[in-house]
Amino acid sequence: MGIILAMIVLGGTIGYLIATKRKGNYLDKLQYIAVFSVISLIAAIIMQIIIMKLILI
Image (cartoon, rainbow, N blue to C red):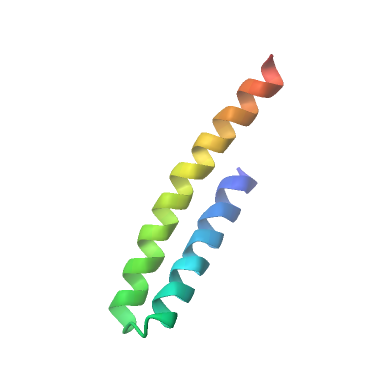
């Protein structure tokens, strides 16, 4: 569970930094944060499944 939360925060931070670098306004920053958080969530869930499968073998 901690990996998933950390990945969501990391993804949101990366999204915010990219939007700031591209000189986006407030709504652009929110959109980048949301999109990168969702992408990171999906990646974290896949990583969690892989970790669980490797431990159970």
